[in-house]
Length: 216
Image (spheres, helix red, strand yellow):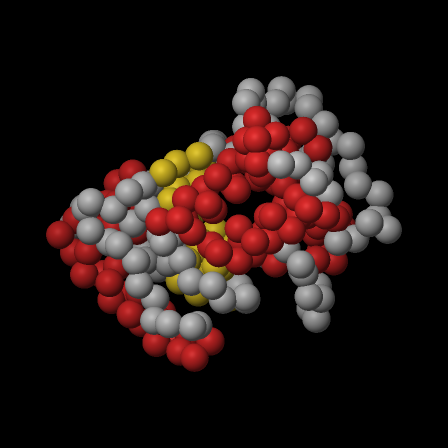
């Protein structure tokens, strides 16, 4: 199953373009007010923890963007970030089959550990266009449990990861997205591919003030 990243209105996503279909696909007229009600309730829940009430374009004219880091690119990028903050552990040369149980990733998610790349390693699937520093457990519009983060914070943390490891300029990083690495590619090559897709999506989310969502 492919893993994509979507940037745009949630009305458009849950209305049929996303892979994660909900009951709204059968009753699309209920979706726009449901999205706005969800956003209002979430904004009230977050309260003073965010700088301003949540707001973004949910009209039919809102721009949208998609990218495809793929499961391998996404997983490799997450592990690259985890090992960047736990260099004492030996980073694997290739992507482990059970990457979600990786020891560096477990350390990055350990209680009390303040990860530099929390919006990347903490299993977030939805990033909102609001600059808050934390991630949190919540429900998406369809009622599914998800970890939610901030698109501006994700964009900054991706930049921090690049500065701490690759130190690539924008032109070089963009080139990492072409072509797709082969199945036997080293972990770093796959992580670079995932980085190119995710940083482009995060930049779109920041520039256009829109949510960003993993789509699988």
